[in-house]
Image (cartoon, rainbow, N blue to C red):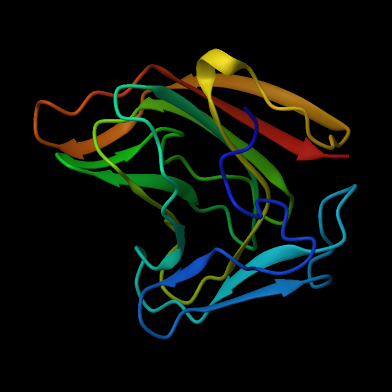
Length: 183
């Protein structure tokens, strides 16, 4: 029970996270921009030459089980940044693919039923637009949100349908997209 991500807070390093795409640079940063409140470092993703390039992790998840994901995202422009689950049957974006606000740490979240062992990667901004991640949490939905350090946020919740590019057998749960700007 708890956060399935290995090193989702990036406080010590970017260990367990891999660049997704040739030439992508992944590093821990503590400034430019400042990390979200309550954090000292975040994961910076730069030198991307395609929208699909980003950062990835392949946790061992239980097929047939619903998982929820939540992460703080930062980008200089109002563009999409979202997690993608690549599984047998296709690609799913459980947090939707709408743009997030520019120049503020924004919480994105969603849930998905696992249909095969996934590779999970963050992608979305246009080529050459870097982005940052922090406070990434992945958990079995039935277990409830794991106990982790929290930040003070102002939250606006909207419902967005997950985006699926898949064979008809791929299923995804209804998605709640939370946009929370750290105060």
